[in-house]
Length: 125
Image 1 (cartoon, rainbow, N blue to C red):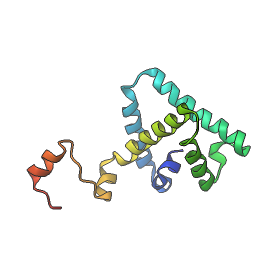
Image 2 (cartoon, rainbow, N blue to C red; image 1 turned 90 degrees about the vertical axis):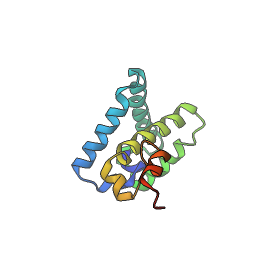
Image 3 (cartoon, rainbow, N blue to C red; image 1 turned 30 degrees about the vertical axis):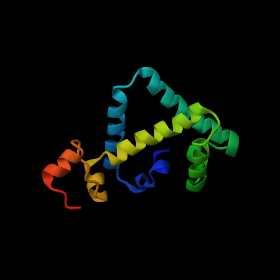
């Protein structure tokens, strides 16, 4: 599901996956156990819904169907499903784009100090 949300993940090496998973794990570490269980349940529900719709699990779908299916779930009439998609998306974004080398490659220069850091360093943009 992560590679459907961030297509760049489909071509990365094992180290990038490890760092992605580590950041997601770190992000979930401070959350209640019930929330983590809900995330696991949501991923299982997505697979079941894919079987109902396509007669195969999410992991067996081609990339285009995976993307269309997740897009349809983010607009589902059931609030819990929409929240699940957005929560999963947030975690995957954090896991991938939260890596220093990925941010540097993209040219992302935000600092934890926000605009104060830009003023301190002298903006070049």
